[in-house]
Length: 212
Length: 212
Image 1 (cartoon, each protein chain N blue to C red):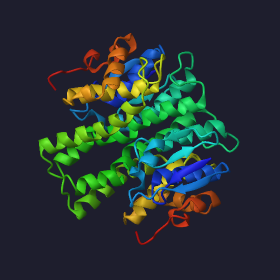
Image 2 (tube, chains in turn red, purple):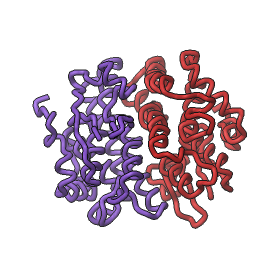
Image 3 (cartoon, one colour):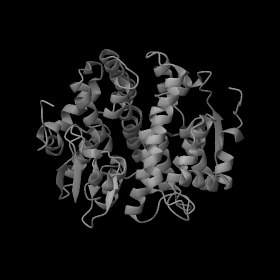
Image 4 (tube, one colour):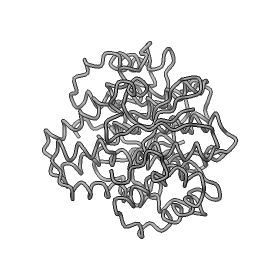
């Protein structure tokens, strides 16, 4: 299968991690968001929203939206699972994932930050306060719930870690003081010792341009 | 089971629809967001984020986050399904649901609108433009994809309808011209002829206060 990705997109980062954990053969195709590649007609034919990631399956069919992709991979490639067997436990893992996917990440997305700076003329400092605000709100709730033994839900990596690590990466990139979230920071460090997470890091992507 | 709900919360509205469709015995407990009930210690003990909905199972266990709740109900109450059997089709339905759950709704949430008006001193008119903007972005993409025959994915109601109808309800409430989205409007009307959707409407809730 083929994943359309951008090194800094945390939604794409999630899917990169899951593909690595599940040891699924795949190729990565870069979509340069800064250059506007996501707005090209050829890309929008695959992904009408013009967002990354997009997963093209071996038969040519396409799945958009990282959460839909991750659920699909979990169903079709169950050998290395990312959700607990018990459905209540799976609900807990999904609820933690949703805090990131629905309550933090959408608010700190590039297109939203552009709207704030553009249409609403929000100054850089206020924009950074906004950015931090939604992470702090969500992380405060997660910090009170995560097990961190050593991963979010215990001894096995789950979807919650797959969502959390890219969000922490962004928080650190934008200088959020993480000492207030010791469990989250410990999970971040534990996950990043694993090959699947390390290989998925933005700086380890072929399309990584650190100066951008 | 017991659902903690607020009549106008569209995340709670989704779960009300699903419980009705699946014919699951449940009670509804109102959490008045305008009065700040969601910030009470007793509610935050159930839902650390202080958001609605929360589902309390018969054994007293609690699930937060509407998407986690809906996936749990789908797994545990499969008799009347809300996802197609085929996992690629299910991915399509989830992707459409995610457009609403991740790309529209989080940006137009009450807490976000309060932040815009408060911390960022955004005027009422600009706030309404923001509100419409994210719906138009997401609905434009959905309009190009949904089948509307007569529901989002064909002849059976799916999770995509469960997410879509509360979002359309909000769009209409805030006077978004919906004529530009004829398929979405047709799906909205088709769903609302069904008992499960009608019963879940904000105005049909015991805690509904139209003047609020």
